[in-house]
Amino acid sequence: MVTRSGTVRPLNSQVEGNGALFLHSLAKKMFNQSTNKAIDNNSCETTALPTYSAALRNPLPNHQKKKLWHIDAKYHCSLIGTCVSIADLRKIAKKCGSTNFSQLGDFHLHSTFVNGAIKTDHHIRLLQKHLEKKYASVAQRFHTTKHETQSKLWRQAVKSGDAAGAYWALLTNPHTTQKLLEEALGDIHMMSHLNGASIRITQKQADEIRDHNRQLKEQLRCLEQSKEEQRHAVTHLSHKVNITNAKNRELQKICDRYRAGEPQAEITDLKNKKNRLARSLATLRLDNERNRAENLELRSTESALKSQIQHLRDQLRCAEREHGSMQALLITSLHNNSESNETDDQNPAIDLSGQSILYVGGQTGRQRFFRSLVERFNGHFHYHDGGLEDGSQRLESLLHRADVICCPIDSVSHEAVNRVKRHCKRLAKDCLLLRRSSLAAFSDALVQSQTDAQQSSTAN
Image 1 (tube, rainbow, N blue to C red):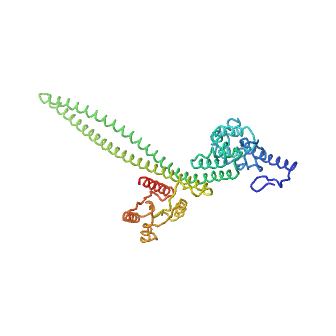
Image 2 (image 1 turned 120 degrees about the horizontal axis):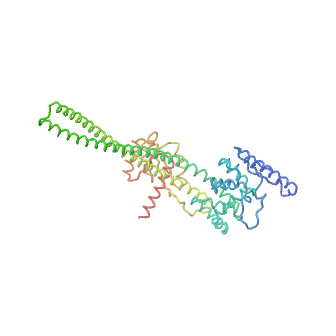
Image 3 (image 1 turned 90 degrees about the vertical axis):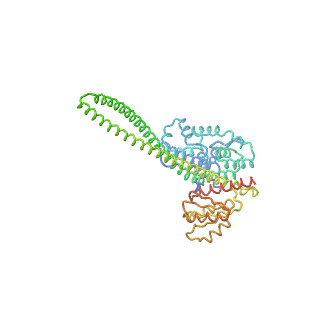
């Protein structure tokens, strides 16, 4: 029977002979037609997954590592998407010598390999060889361990961010239990959601800052080039001034000789020439002073641009630190989920230990995400809108009970910020001023707060 999910299940345990062969040949024909149509016609639609289990078509020899065509078809998409890059898929497709592969986009190339993984075609065997070579050491380590050790190795790989090799090792190991396979598939699926969301937001901000930084560098380069041209112009004008002064001295000598007995007309002419040269000299000096003023202005502009670039670099470092803190919290969250059903004695990598977190200001709609994050790591979350609706008496009461106080400076008034700082100073508590009211900035504040607390306890 063909189910809604696309897999083929026998009508009962007694189906044999001609009935099973008919279903097998029908599924094979449907898969070959859809796959060939996607490759030959360069279709923009993805082919459906085969309607039968890969293990049913290619039974696995006893005590041997699984090949791609032995692995259940529902794992092929996550396996190829996680363990093989698009660049490697194109290299493998190029070795096959088919021009149809080069015409496919990234998504359709991925779909072609996924849908063909249940077969033993040439490009699938090349992909199998590539994966075996790339993850040989990891697969060997998983193949020689027991189930309990495999589960521990998988959690360590997820925590360290190196899950690709471990995922290949689990799927190719014939002794891996179905429970562990489903757990690994769930972890891979959730990592693609959680990490993708936070990384896209932070990466977009980092890309914008880098683009702005490149524009400022280009402006600085143009200003430096203009400054160099002005310097050459000043040097040239100084050389002209020196020449003019020399000519002026020569004319002065001629004038002195004419005063001693030369004709008066020639003396008058020389005086006129001297006056013209004096005016030219004055003009050159004015040009020289103007160029000096422009040079000073260029230096001032250069200094301002350097300060702006340094500010952007600081913002980039802060965004990268927030991204790292957010990623650490996501990995910790996955780590806690994977171990929550196995042990209750181990402490999480990030534990607020029942601390009360007070968040003052920011956008009201985001407080539920902040609350969920704090409660997930064993903390208590309190919120105050900074004075829009909540009063100052409630703020003072919350400040007395809070262990960590966070206040975003981009979404709260200056009066509210000053009020929080005054209360914190009077209560001898630290106030963490966040540069923006985002989940990444709040996550970074929690990580930094716990790090400072750990360092303080270690010093004591």
